[in-house]
Length: 280
Image (tube, rainbow, N blue to C red; front, top):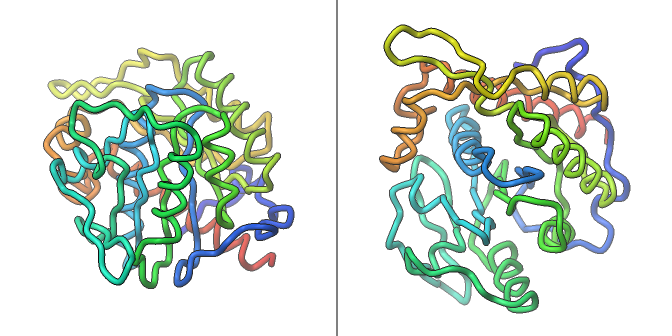
């Protein structure tokens, strides 16, 4: 289920991961998905990672905390869904085998989030601890892009078992990856690995490969920083089409190259979590 060797390095227990944080009852592992900058396809990868985990038989939830541009309602064909309550708790939506809560469920399609810090933190706290998540093996949190106060506050609200960082091959994106990694290190969250999205373009006509954004930068950065490299996800038209249609490629076309790459990344991240758990 997991590759071994050089790309298994960089895994180590967090520093006092539960100190001052409220666990979520019934949730075994909280996994943060982050990016050092926007525009790298983080939300698309987050959603497909969550579905890939669910396809293995795991019980999975997805929290869309990307306040700057919540994409989960579109990705799961849940646009127009509104939050419901039961026994003073939020009842998550259900789609593709996941329990889903998105900040987008509170907004109209064309409404920006202009909440100030305290109001925003209160809403996110409610999503984490005021939702009827039930028993989950994984709660995947799609964090906002960047490395600011919002991201740090979120991962300090509850013990986070590990983080997956999404990047693209360009040098500018890789610089921001290092910032994201340092942010998680400072708050004691282990890095499960790095995914290189849009690693290369696959032509839908001839299946030719073009490295339009460069290639291999994330693998090199992982080697330099001692991190696990979770693989390369190609820029594939099928992935874009599935996302726009409110479908998830890993479930609608699991044999597609991008779907296979994401499924492998999910399996390797889950194995990294299991390794962390065994280390205590």
